Length: 428
Image (cartoon, rainbow, N blue to C red; front, top):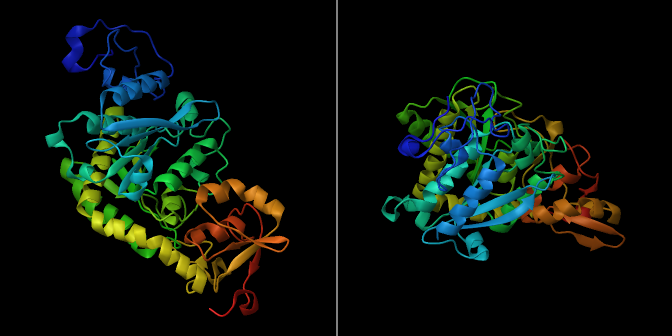
């Protein structure tokens, strides 16, 4: 039997009409929301967790939050394959700055439900942004006075509507953060490029798992700037592993390792954000637990991440700010190997590293045309060289260059010609 939120139960007659879009969790009894609803509650909350927030309910909820809170500004940053909007929510106190100013300051970015059959992160993201929007100023986290929080509650709206892992084109968005084929991954890449977040939380679930409450992981890719990866790891091991068990949550590391699923794959958002010079955190709840419990542990994690950011913002901003210049210098001086494979828990073999790495790759004009979406969304620069085009390693985003164009990479988009000799590159 469905019931409304306890504090509103006396207001409503319950209508027992199933809503198929909301009833996507096996075993849930799903009911229509009451005829009169609180616009500050998600559909999930209105049904006390017995049915997830529908697409239309999410649109109405976001519109109400946007209209009623000065701390919030919401825009559409993309659309899904089937045309559903992908919204970006900006939250700050007393109000969000213009976008160019947000990009210049500390930014936390939360991404919900890249996999459409993993809904708890989306529900948590909606509640997280709502609480920040309306809580009394005296109860706001201290970090919100300096940090802007960005949220994409539903990164895969078509998959959520259909309760499928992949998008409507049957592509796994969370393997597409280098190739950037899907409109959903492109929307996320645009936010990362334009707002330069310092820390990114990627909310997922393990649909068949019963325990533990959460599994967590940082970017393992070896091309991530060391201090950025170290702080990502500290967020997990020094903060979340300490704080979440205080409230009775069970927490483990994600992936049995070494190797997949917790590996260095550059198409996964956890690693992709590290390669783009931001701290990254993967959060995986156990999909066979109760829906309310799963959403609650995600929201607790988001709150703890914001606390960590506030406590260590100086270190985080220093590392994130230093990363682009440090990587550009490494690309210019060719002072470190570039790793096509291998992770911080899985040492690469010699043939998996470019040592020394190329100073540039030669591309044809046709190859550059093929690469244009990736060049644009990843902020890469090219240089004309006669009839060819050079993609230099001497730039901040050298962290992805060989992954895009080296023939020996995991999934190169094109195969460029590497320049490696001293004659071609000059003395390091």
